Image (cartoon, rainbow, N blue to C red; front, side):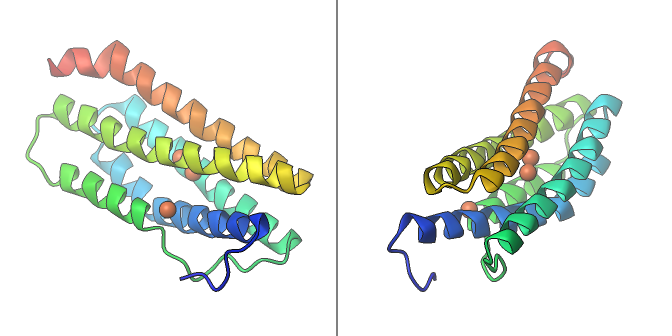
Amino acid sequence: MFEKLETLDDLFEMQLKDLYSAEKQLVKALPQMAEAAKDGRLRRGFERHLTETENQVKRLEKIGKDLELDLDGHTCKAMEGLISEGQETMSENATEEVMDAALIAASQRIEHYEISGYGTAAHFAERLGYADAASLLRQTLEEEQLTDTKLNDLAKNYLNAKAE
Ligand code: FE
Ligand code: FE
Ligand code: FE
């Protein structure tokens, strides 16, 4: 529970804490997803996004430091759920192509959740006049959007065709 939620500043802090928890969970989950991927491009995509995700955690830590906010102590339950659905998928006995298609489906859900969170947080930062934070949040938003696009391209051009 949050102690106070009265102002847009409070809500912004809550959004940051949620994103911070979500990203830290992903730093742990992405290596497993990379390992489960059969297609080399998909595996390298997960590995690249792991590096980006580690940097996204650092961006949030910088924002927390600059604005003197403690981002620890909250768990994003939605990301817990999305990751556990992904893990359920990975434990299925699927063919290689179907497994990769399922991994893409799970990770696109994750990227969309992040895109939504960062879009909101960046908008709040702008409204509140935190220009540096807004710019950092927009950088991450672009990485999430690009990741989603790449997953989409992989799915459409190759994997789904192989899985048919
Ligand atoms: Fe992220
Ligand atoms: Fe959340
Ligand atoms: Fe992401």
